[in-house]
Image (tube, rainbow, N blue to C red; front, side, top):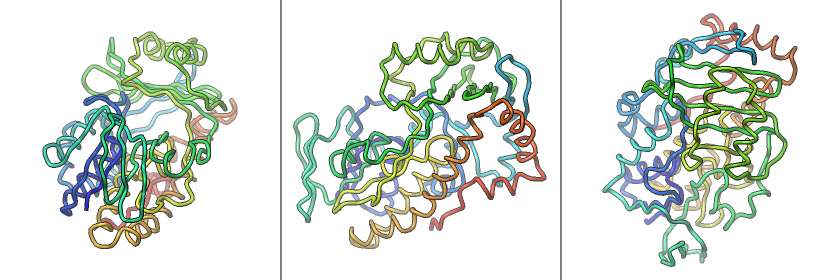
Length: 384
């Protein structure tokens, strides 16, 4: 079986590594240049951790993990609102929790498949023709090939989904926010794993990477879903956060390489069925939990592992149906969690912010962390 994987992000690379374990031949195409990745951090949680264990990559991820420690939240004037400790969260997860820069994460996964299967950069798919016995594919360089299965792992704005399932807007569920993330040098240490600031309809902060830089994450209420150019993005960020003090002030003055950064609408993807004939969707292309759930990468990795295992044992029709049946309940739950968290992550009123400042430290403290995790964290899937 030859499988075309469109998208060289966490979902696509994990899927390629899992297929190789089963002796299935993957071919990966990625529209970005080699080495081009987003400048933000991602979390590895229970389901991603279990997949990483099966792939023998846990120690590699640990070696590149960001430091876990205190997280401090301030108001827009720099006054402390509340604090908690990521180490308490890690302990509740029995150590199966880490944060890592996306660039490091992808580098490790790329190393796991490099030399074992083709990875073609700066290439997209322009046409797909499924004749029932295979899929004829035309690529952006004019070349053509035929595959037994095509899997779109090309993200929230999936080109495969647009070609085979319908326009982007048909599957979009905007949550009413925009978000942006990029990497910044630190002029002085943050003094914590995370220093964030919040105000009504706004949240922004910096995560210490551990190498003298920080990963930013800014989110604000915005109902618009149009895409913005680099100049407009900078203008929006300054309008929304330009009056905030350090450390946000310095982050906003940093030069931003948008090829290595993120700026987009916070939206979920809802596709009634994740496969159509011999074409399937995986990860953000199929569901997009958004960063609010904190489980997007791990859920994508679990989906990749399960889809590969099903394809190794069954014909493509049964395999795709089983993959969806196993993953759909988790995705539905985590999308609901993401929508719920959004209302707390971005305070809607000064009163709500005060209540959150009182409740969150309690819910994330040792006596209550297991209860909180059971309500918000993804349950472990049967990954075997």
